[in-house]
Length: 523
Ligand code: KIV
Ligand code: ZN
Image 1 (tube, rainbow, N blue to C red):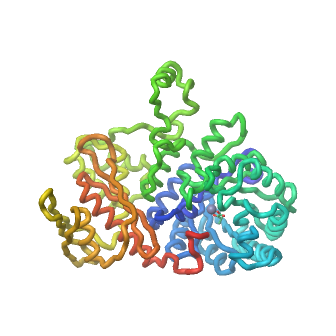
Image 2 (cartoon, protein in one colour):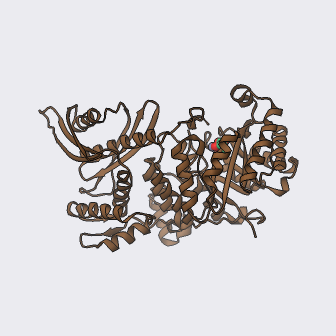
């Protein structure tokens, strides 16, 4: 039975790598996207929206690589309705076993009048043409009416009818600006299913943004009204307030199956791993009280709750931490652990695609860490591995860092970087050793970027914990986030700073936003 014919099966469409990546500073490198895509496949999502191929060479290559290498889910690329977008998108996804083209155009009055400057009839004609073109490339075509949440329902029905007639098999109704509410949105979906011509032959999909905190509730209301595909992201990552969170949607459907009566193909035990991986790679922390994946989501603080849970777990728990793959802070390995144990532990954390060279580098970091730190936890391994993945594609490599500071001294730092085999050295003074080191790096790299965020947290508990520094830089409007970890916080800061600079340089050389008319952040 196909996904489309099953009445009670919800298709989970993950857009972490496309809409999630549009979250400011969350741009990922290809290797990171591939790592996440493999984890999404293990999680059991039905569709991975891997990127927006026309937007840059980097996006194109990432979508193409994921299409070639990741098995299981359909691999989808986003495209506007222009011919060149659709053709490029087709080239990126076509090598997938199940390629999908997702094309969209705005339908609300404000978008038509002010952004597109097109009449309603012109939009309908464009939809028919572009969906037919996409359909000539792949049978799996999704069409979205951008800003559907603020579009008149009658007009939506006309646009959707045109898309269905031209061959779209999935119709997505996005609440692009997070404006709607569960009652209206549910009614809207029911209305469109009853009015659009051919609606009974397609899957209705929803895509909700969280500007009013309604993304998950709206998506679930749409499911009740007959939508059978939900678009969502891990940790609710996404522009502004984010997208509907995958883990919240899925756990609602599982925990309240009595109410929704729906199935998904998700292996919930992979949720926690996916959540950690996305957070580590993007540098976007998860708030402690975030539903399902926050550090406090399963913690019982109040005595009365603890007492109840000890007597009977279900007094205060509607699901178990283990159900979403949370196994607690486990001490994983020690000084005497070998490379084999290390490698299999990484695989169990979701990193089973690392090259031998990456494993060797990470293993040597792990051994160094064991000399400095008594117990090594999963969190330490995440920090090491993310650092290594970022460094694998580095342009500048940190060879040496020396610094001095103190209550009376002027903080100074000397930094030696290697670029293409050449050693580059400089020194800086600043109002602390971190500032001094950053200035030295700026002098070497010539990078003019503004530090817009800096934060330091302990990776685990204990006096010997590694410090993890998260940084966001703004280089001429391009924001990137990066992290660095070390038992020395100045070293961790310098690694994070250098990772961010390398990321900016890589994105520049991959031609990010080379198509200047495709500003990802304002789509
Ligand atoms: O929010 C939105 O409207 C989108 C579309 C491109 C699907 O992300
Ligand atoms: Zn969106």
